[in-house]
Length: 270
Ligand SMILES: C[S@@+](CC[C@H](N)C(=O)[O-])C[C@H]1O[C@@H](n2cnc3c(N)ncnc32)[C@H](O)[C@@H]1O
Image (cartoon, rainbow, N blue to C red):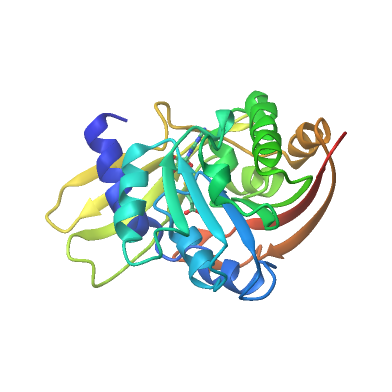
């Protein structure tokens, strides 16, 4: 995707995906009470909608919410959409979560806070499975930097087997539809799969008859996330438990198939 398309994609991101999983995250994510002291780190935060959601529900002045994304346009959009939030509490930074370091940020994270990682919106599909150990190393680095031995990871993925069976042979998946949108008539993604890889080309049709095409990456390839691979990578650095906290196989929001949300309770191995 070229520079202009990357920027346009970030600008349209919220309109293309609408409120995908927002409500579910709001209702189902076990983040304790409203005044819980939290450090929440969003890996691949996009335009920051989920993180604003979680931050907006938390009234503890010492809590801290940090969103990282590799796409600078996503981050600049996240920042402008978050202007009305407490700037001492909610931050966004351009960063590759496979090589994450909080640099100067640990000072902002209270050592007594519960540490939570979010990785929502099927973001893991965008990294090749061989890089999962890098993600796990990032989690361990951050935990060491903030002085936490334990953390919770909420991972939302469209699980490998279900999703690959659903796509099998090719699918058109309608994305958000908003009859009141000034310019966009319809957005959809065209999916085809081969082995554990699928294409993730996204299209918007405009009311003026033109069409735009986007993809997340240089190459429009994503991977069916294999939970066993995720667990095996996590096991290298952590003792952990895993629970599925949300799964709506049948339902759709904005025409998009929903994901499964898993909760991993992580303890750093000594
Ligand atoms: C499908 S979007 C999900 C966004 C957001 N989590 C949500 O639920 O709306 C995936 C995001 O992950 C980002 N991303 C992919 N690989 C990344 C990496 N290695 N480091 C940081 N961000 C990454 C992409 O730029 C994109 O914004």
